[in-house]
Structure formats: C-alpha cells, structure tokens
Image 1: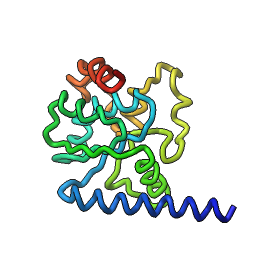
Image 2: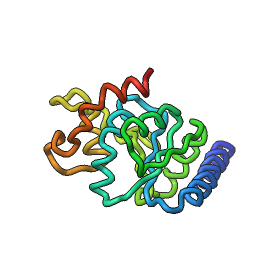
Image 3: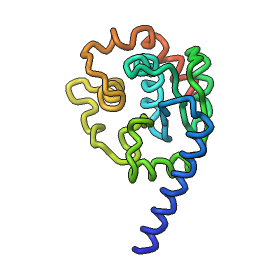
Image 4: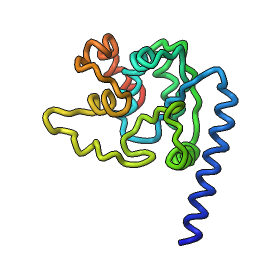
Length: 169
C-alpha cells in the first residue's frame, strides 16, 4: 500500500514537472485546454465549442495539449490562429491529470473530459431527456449558462462531421 502511494506521488510530481516546462514554453498564454485520451465525442465537441469558450472567457488564445496528433489538423481546419498545439504522450497527460487531482489548476487548465482526472458521474445523464455529449461538454466542461446552444456555437455546428472525420479517420 505504501509503495502504491509513493508511486502515485512520484507520478503526480512528474506531472508537475511537465506542467512547469509547458507553462514556461507557452508563457504568453493563460489557458491550457487539455484533451486526455477519451471518447472521440469529447474532442469533437470540445473543438467545435472552443472559439465560443475563448470568447466567453475573454481569452485571446490558448494552448491545446492532446495525445491525438490529428488535433493539429483540426486546429488548421478551423483556422484557429490564436491556438497553439502541444502533442504529449498519453502517459505524460495522465501524469498531468494526477497532478491536477492533487493541485487545483482550474484557473489555467480546462480538461475536456468528464472522467479524467476523476469521474464526475455526468455521463450517467447521457440519453436521459435527450442529453448528448454536446450538452455535457457545453454545460459541464465549458460551463456555458446560455440555454440556446445553437446560438452560442454558431457556425461550429456545420464543422462537426469534418472534425469527426479528421480525428477518427
């Protein structure tokens, strides 16, 4: 048991080191959007809603961290010139999530997942009263309060299929 705790702490400390290096590399940016290896739907809707999220948060830009290297193609497709991309291994992102679980970084990080670094239980709502991944990302991850999703997302809805193809194909 003691060895497991020590291993978890070391894993989180390695995540902190990764974070410090990323923060220094991208020191001009205030927000890091992290896409852990998760369901494709989170990545698709997270990217579709990203421009609206940045606007809502009054951010001029952000850094996307993901292990899916196709995310860079999505950034190019969406013409997001204010977004920087950093590919990391799944293990490195998992280490960052361990650190996040111990040290709240929510002012700097937005994690596009409902199960990482810990399960919020929100996925149990899928299918109930028409709840989809779109609503989960909109309300639970990006924390929009506007009830009219279509108005908030705008033209991003037209890009969903293409983003699915880029990320999944």
